Image (cartoon, rainbow, N blue to C red):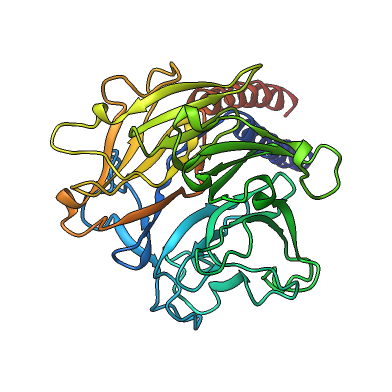
Amino acid sequence: MFAPTMRRLHLVGSGFVAVIGACLTASSAQAASFAFNGLYVSDQGLDAIYLTQDFNQNGDANDLGEINVFFDGTNASGLANPTGNVFTLLQSRQDFLYYGDGDTDSVYRLLDTNNDGDALDIGEANLWFSADNANAFPLLTPNGLAEGSDGAIYIVEADTFGSPSGDFVYRTEDLNGDGDANDAGESSIWLDLQALNPSSSPFEITFIGDVAYITDTAGGSPVIYRAEDVDGSGAIDAAEVTVLTDPFDFIFSFGLASNENDVFALNFLTDEVLRIDEGPTTTLTPVWDSTFVPDGFTFGFGFSLAAGPNGELAVTSNDFPESIFRLLDLNQDGDYFDEGETVVYASNDLTGFFPDRPRAVAYRTPIAVPEPGLALGLLVTGALGFRRWRRRSDAIG
């Protein structure tokens, strides 16, 4: 009886471990919350992209060692002066960080492949899209970036006074697997903004599902567009675009962000964040303004807005002192007006050097954290089951 019993013990015990492991994995995925994992910030004064992290979990990145260069001109990938004027950042679902630079008029792609906290090592950075693309599309000012539900990278191209060659949203994808979208057939004009308004001056773009939202200052007559490829043609025509706001709303916004449910705009004129609620008529609901900044700090010249895990937002301020704020909806009431919901995440006044001229901000991929109660429950259930099996095994033995 000894050998068969021991063999049965081994088999059932292995199955028990496997089942519990599978349950933990599946349940963790289903009942996970997502923890804050840092912010990427482009700084036009320091000519770099920084990775900022709250290592001591006090809510900010003002402490020693929490602000580090993620990418700049010292990179070993051979990209010259790639971060002199970074306008926009995008953290993709595949963990790539895309950014648009206004000095080189290019979009780049970064990935920290060796997990050392930067993309400065050889092979960790490459050109994604530029005016040298095979389709000869102009790229004069890459102002905005977003990832669509189709996995393509959408680029907002704004012309300049010297070269008024069009304002577009490009759809880009890497079809041949070489790491860029510069080859034939890898880019297309998804939306011609100048056809909608000859004075177009677009900035950011964001998606909820298949619907895109684009902010356009439109020569002093600012609007926010809603665009959806309803007919599946691969491009947006005029009938598929809706103007959500008009010049009378006075929403002069460079920053636009979305989570799974809501779109937010940072109003440059009033230093407030608005939620865009669609309906028969668009409602602009204030959810935060600069009066909630803690004493000793100010908010102004806000260019960028990002949406993160658990309903939080991040905004950049180029007022003195230059700062980055985290907006936390602690009581889940849909706004950031309550006590403790505005956090001075990073401030030049506290760090002594950063930020200097913050422009774009993006959330690093959040960490999935299993619900503690669920994990404990699974372990307790497993332990009880093990005890019942143990008694039965002893009886058989």
